[in-house]
Length: 173
Length: 191
Image 1: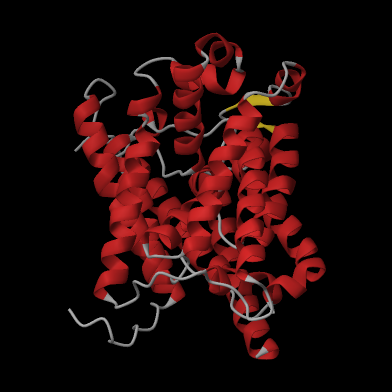
Image 2: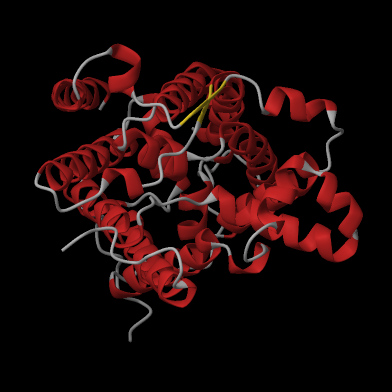
């Protein structure tokens, strides 16, 4: 496979969205639940903390939830996310879009971009814990099932991001 | 056919399905270009509304599919897990999440796509999410009271509004079509 091949353009948003919707529908039909992402991180965090400090993990309302049943290492969402990594890699490989890089605007130093990526991740984790899910588990899955909380989260998260965007414009242009 | 197809008991089959469905999910997100922080963030500056178009079209397709399959008796809605509603935590959680999203440029799912396709910033978002999860999990117990507040269980818009399932589905379709028209208009104006 040639590494020099120019990356192909991304798919049409509506077409890719419809495809994503069919995947979500297949999820409901096959396993009776929707897609997600943040839960895999919560579950893995629960597993790591339980391995180091089992008593502390058991008293945490977040971690204890993931320590019940089949345990933190057999969480459905963790397996789903392994699939996401595979599927994304295959798609990018087929389209010539695999490239090791730090994606950033020219004005933003590499270190700053990585620090902001990390900090944004921390904030999203806190938000996703409170919301019981993220863009996939609440906004998309909850939204499609007409959940009140899903639509509340979808509306508030996007409103907050839009409201904050002008203040951080420097970071992205 | 009587869906859901895989019963709760068969963990192996369920986890195998998780990998396969996840792969399709990751494939679709990468095709859409949502593994790129710069493309994703265009949403919030009106340059490129791919996030909204992809999310809303996915939501509408899945919503219509669930509605019609259950209406035709092919899908048992009572066996589909609806994420629970916790009003106050979801309100505050949405604010925090939105703030994190516009700074990180990627959400948890799309950060996985970014990391898998070689973007180091995506890997740092994942590291931040994991660190945040450990931190929040270790917060003092006072946090638990707020975490459990405003609990309504599985609560849907038809139950909230008193409208029929079909009427809410139709309203969401109309809302989505209006949003798509608005998105095309905004993109033309900003470019």
